[in-house]
Amino acid sequence: MSKSSATPYFQTMSPVPPEPTPSQAPPSLATATREAGPTSTTPSSFPKVKLRLELRDLSHKSTDLFLKNFNSAKDFADLVEIVEKQLYTCTNHEDASTRLPVPSHTKIPGTRSVTLILRDMDGVAYTTGTDIDNDHKEIHLSLSYLNHVASQKAGYSARTEILGVVCHELVHCFQWNARGTCNGGLIEGIADWVRLNAGFIPPHWKKEAGKSWDTGYQNTGYFLDWIEKTRGTGSVYMINQALYHKKYDNDTFWKDLFDQSVDSLWKEYGESLKKPKDESESFGDPNLKMQIRIKKEVEGS
Image (cartoon, rainbow, N blue to C red; front, side):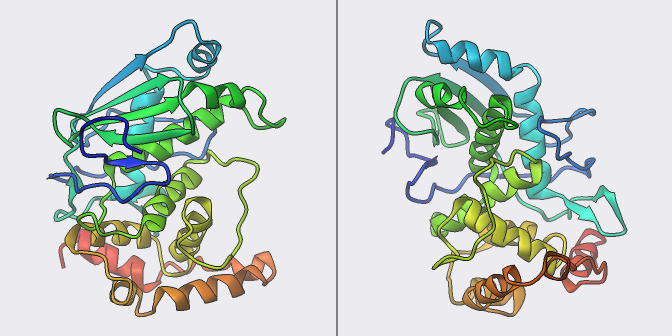
């Protein structure tokens, strides 16, 4: 449920958020890393976003855990840049260590500020618009959940989980939602696809094709990652941009992008999981149609 009187932008297991306002696309940026921590070595040329941290209970033991594992002066800004890169730039298929320039017509939400609020509450986290307007976002992170994070499995740090949760929530501050009509599972899947590609992967995540493609989170995130690999670099970029341009229609949305229904793609994805790993993931052809399509858009042709 919403925790403020403002129109909710996103919260875990919630309806789709309202549409943010677009801003002008920036020039190209370097590739985000997959390390267990955000890395940004150059100033971002994306629209500037004001970042704030609010600690509601300094005496709570999880506040200390958070501050020991999250460098608010650096990590917050680096995560924002990683999210923006994943959503609004594409890997250069001719040189995977770089990213293509953003096509000039790319629409990016005009989010002006994000406040990360730590407080004692149920659940994990949620994101919402503020009372000022919907271009100002709040991410509410549960201190009770952080207490659980302290006992993570060996080899998976509390820092990685904190970065992963914040990364996921930040996607909701910068993604499009088809004017409020987008399938909620796709919204959540894009967020976990970004988290996956940022390298903040929890040990319980696994690729599996259940009953439906749109159950969201890592289930849909891995499905989108398969689409990115098999239909070409920039596929998720095109999905997100399509969610700006028009309302979501399950019957036409996927066919317009990939000439296939989402159910057909999901069935193909499920079949790929049954194949040997080297066979199911051997889709590195740099001449895939989507990669060519992205390059043409970058060059304005």
